[in-house]
Length: 510
Image (cartoon, rainbow, N blue to C red; front, top):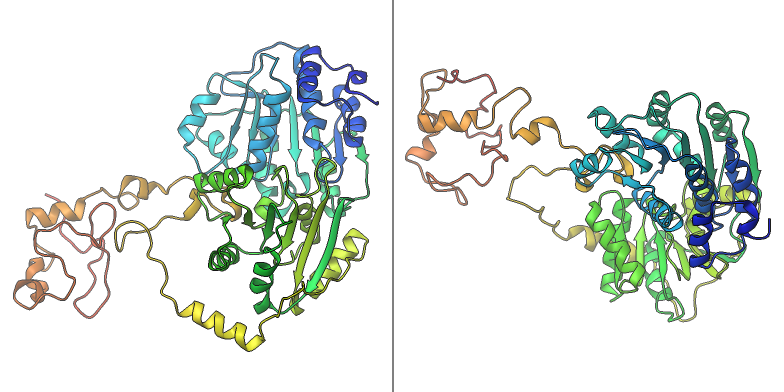
């Protein structure tokens, strides 16, 4: 197959490809599209940036064009599961681009945003639903979505979907799907244990592997620089002085590490933004949009951005921390050198990460060249690095948003790593009270002057409020509490000023 017209795709799909300027399919597309058009189960493995999304989107749109049945109410005909929100959004955009001339609907759902709007969007039924597993289960539990009418299941980044982080959710989802369906799995890496698990969900699949498993992109120039941990920030600041580095992705192992790198870049007057699971969805979208339009030159991210971030013009990838999972290295450096472009990947490696480096070289079956410090860079000594870290630790922590003492929810609105979980508030937080309790119960008793169980009023039990001097910072009598919970109840205290009042240690409401 040398051209898309050789596949026999529906004319509206070919028209969209022509308008997008796509003429010649990539190797993964040439091998995966024909069997997928026939309805066969498929497991496709190819390097990042080789067009795997089109490899399953084009045959799906073609098959839908042959059957004009409507999607079931509160259901879908095609279900695409993605591990991250960013990747889910990009997949939905690809379906919109390739199917612009087809009368079919597609919707994307993920955590961190209003679930009610998503319920309204899928209520009449959608042909193609792209989702993260956590939010999909939320919609099913709320009886806003049924999966009985799914004809095609797609797992993008299948190795991560079948890993421990998602396998339990995936098993639950698969039980809700019809036994008779087409399943398409795609990934850039497929460890042997994950491949064996994938066979349980595929029926006589076609195996398509255009490159060996865990092969890095050929156009990426790789190098590793050995330095101690305390020199990494200074080394990054120096590397980014090079004007040839136009757009760079910096990967860290932890969320707090990403924020720490951004603070270090700010000191060096380098415009940067962080994206990780502790960021809310609007924050993640703003950071990614700024990175796309060029207003933000550096995007610092955890492995949440290693898959699915497709930004044109990413010239460099910097592994500030080497990943402890060798397959993640392949996905990370695959964010550059996409669609035939050139790219460069620089990895910083300290003494503790040398074992990770050996695992990466063993998995990718290649030796990463060792590079030296850039010209003019003098690394700080270990003692200087320790002093800088101690000074950073002595700085006062940032004050949380909201009223002082207010209970803070989890950032990002979701559970688990990556914020891809349910994203729903606890029931008693949403009601403003405890589980099974009534909001404002204690506040109503105070207003009515209800006696305590031992017959004493609150002002008798706390003499400092009645006659003693009020501590500094205490609120005046009758003022609205500013250090309580959301529903106005004061926070419990176990200090020496008096014993804590338990939930049941008061008279019933009259």
